[in-house]
Image (cartoon, rainbow, N blue to C red; front, top):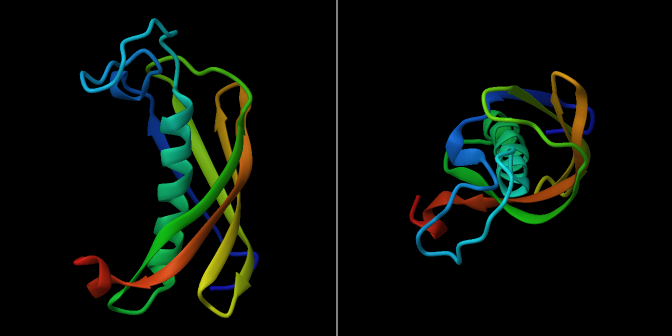
Length: 126
């Protein structure tokens, strides 16, 4: 892994990704039917994890360390969202910082940084 490496994924927003999707274990609240911030962060995190997974040796994986993002625009159900990530820093081959951006058909909807650490999968029963 090295700075400058990039990866992207694309999804179609579905009902389970909407802010108004109610989990029965969580308090019910009325929210708009748009791509939720937690779903956007999940997409960003998984895109970063996939880039790392493509580079790691057998038995290694990664876990998230921090997320700092801004959700800039709403995206309705059924629309495409593309996530682009780029490694900006690698420390000792173990801690990786990413620039993360999400776009829909109208432009940038989210931006920020995400940090991940390399782990031994066996330590996490993976």
